[in-house]
Image 1 (cartoon, rainbow, N blue to C red):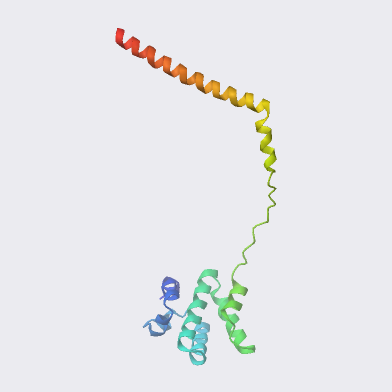
Image 2 (cartoon, rainbow, N blue to C red):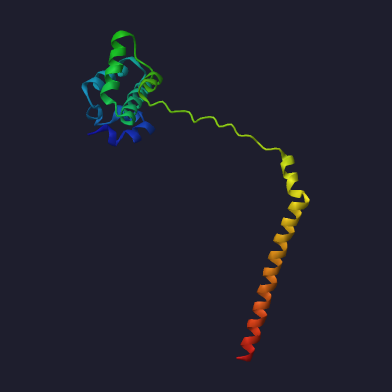
Length: 151
């Protein structure tokens, strides 16, 4: 059984890994079996389950199953069990920060230019055009109604 098929469910309930009938089949290699044996022997039951499940989840997310297993075993051989933060820092892709964009807020006094006489003429022109369009529409409706009455 491939752990990739069930790892998302195990992340939500890592203790299920301990009691799974397929537990040994879920470990993808001898490296992970050795890691599980170590954490199961040295950590509290819940912590051991969380560690191996999060490690398998990281392996799935990064597609670095072999490299992660070798890294953890290498750390065990030289120092101690690496934390999940160490593993994630090493294997997760670093997200690039979006660039900072400087935005200049214009002054509110810039709106005063809209209130100058030239701007008033433009606004009045727009109002007159809209009014003329409304009158034209009314005349058209009136003329249509008269023609319908004649026909």
